[in-house]
Image 1 (cartoon, rainbow, N blue to C red):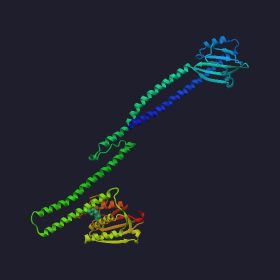
Image 2 (image 1 turned 90 degrees about the horizontal axis):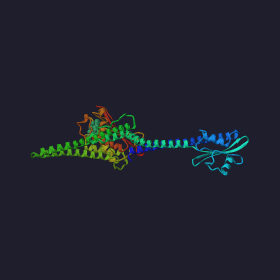
Image 3 (image 1 turned 60 degrees about the vertical axis):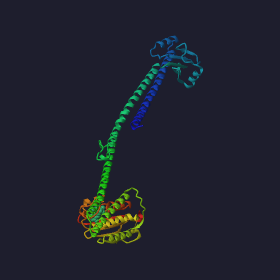
Image 4 (image 1 turned 30 degrees about the horizontal axis):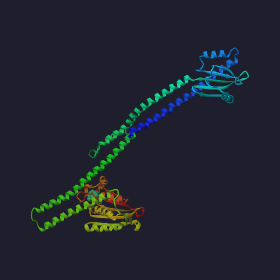
Length: 457
Ligand code: ADP
């Protein structure tokens, strides 16, 4: 069942329940009132008859019968019978009683003082009446034709109102639910038109106040996030292809030129050296890209274990010095060394990648190819600062350098791909740590790795 039908049915059921309760109540209270009113009138008529018979000597039964018949206030099919103390009939308005009167009924009147009941169409009232020192039993009956007709009329009116309500409520419910749901349908239709090719489209946010407008706003925010992610992804692929294509084009060109004619051995050696640099660069780029892809998944399959940061620092320093003899790395310990202040939990290979990148950057972007590494401990964490002097990073570049392939303008002449820092940031997030940077243009630059202690992870 769709929501529109559901809303219509709920609306229909609720209104019908309310109309039914109101109609039944009206009918019930009207019939109660009718019965009480008729009982009061019947009793008045019977008392009136009894008074005429007992208080006026000149009124005899025959005269009373005539008076009753002529009296316009007499009730339809009215019948009054009066018994004396010995249960003998003193007066009967008709020859034949419409309601059988037996000893049981007379006994009940004597015991209960007053008896009222309905039999067939008749309302029957029996009660004790005292006059001139004697007790009489009066039994009066009549048919409440007007009341019954009024009730039938009321029932018909209520049934007609009920039937009309069913039709009106069904139509109104359908129209109303359609109107309530139309903004949702509009949103659905608008969303339907949005594809990867037109992610810049946004939904109409309406009055910007009600819930549906909030839904549209939330959806628009999600579209903006998707658009940014989609754009970043597209850019990423374009940049990656460009970075791989450039060295391949250079290598291809160099080999083609070399093959144009026979060359000297030195020429070939230089060519191979140049090709090797290009291939090594591509190898480094593809390794970094692969790592970025692996660490970017929500659940990278990495086995974390307890590791000592100082061990990694020394081994990376050795590695870097072997590859670049011109680089100087100074390592300082700014703390009382203990297992706790040096250990964290993580993946040694991944943390090596971060440290190597920060050490290499420190040397690469400094004026004197030198980086100072300071290992310190905070309350719950290990901090490793990489400080170098050099061109620095302009303040508006500080956020961007963590985006893939972004390279600061002052450092364009230094070789690189712009993958190291985004990869470092992702690896630090995996280790529940962070990476911070502070720098200014032509200033010293400090990158800080923050890692939780082993026992706080
Ligand atoms: P790459 O070094 O290959 O360009 P990174 O992601 O490691 O890529 O760095 C991104 C950018 O951040 C660099 O291009 C450079 O502009 C800037 N940067 C990183 N480290 C430093 C540093 N120590 N000093 C100055 N700029 C830096």
